[in-house]
Length: 352
Image 1 (cartoon, helix red, strand yellow):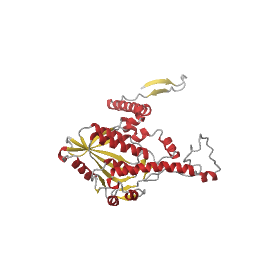
Image 2 (image 1 turned 90 degrees about the horizontal axis):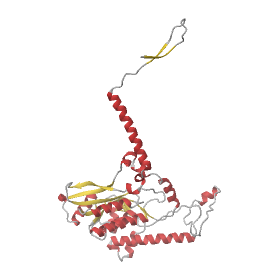
Image 3 (image 1 turned 30 degrees about the vertical axis):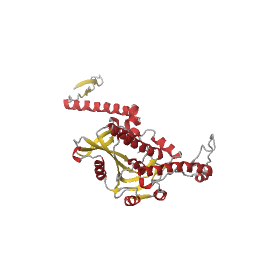
Image 4 (image 1 turned 90 degrees about the vertical axis):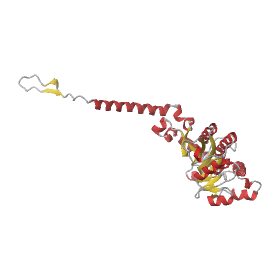
């Protein structure tokens, strides 16, 4: 103990001495623990700052890198069957592009299984995916077999046509919904509601067609005709893609019209209509890919491609690292006329 102050100096009064207690010395273990806490805090703050300010943490490039992972069959196999997966609403094609590029660059990949579980998405992203898949097959001359999950509708069916006209290459599970071949541009007319609130639309525009699809006012016949023309063009392309992937529909106008009403079909109905070849699971599609590529299970490894997680993803989460700006984009998407190959209620979709 040590003194650091005294009471009054009057000798007739008792003297009060203030004593400061000296804490006992900390153990080595306690000091090491405190040092570790400080180090962790500094490390965490550095990581957060990296997530906020690093260009890689917000770039699409960083979040679309893919890495190969073992899936099934012989883990030491020389030859590979690669699974390319399309899961969820199709709003962006970059991850599929990276998967196609990785498979194209790997000479040991001898066949592709396209695993689709999607209700479709935008016309452009669906068409881009189809393009990258066809480009890969043209470059490598390898077979592609489709495995449909719970849903492969609209844009999900569109990309399935990348398999070409090979026999028995589209497999749907017993509970798959597929088809929904068609195009939609969503439009919501809220002009009546705004009128009740005494709100009027008074935008300044460069031409009469600049505000096509504006939900704040009723659509004119000329505007509707313009958008219908865009839908018709996209629909014609969809039908041509189906004819390219399903030879039985070529030259048969009645058959193609029957399956392109926008209706969704069960896997059994899809087989009967010719939209799907067989009912089967992922392993059945893999076995067909082995057969087409003349591969043996004992010497073949099935691999899949997954997004490569960065340190920032692990720390703050992949979705959080990409979240900046997504709210604004979602609002702008609501106000922008856009065509969809989609079996859903479009217009409120967000990135997957």
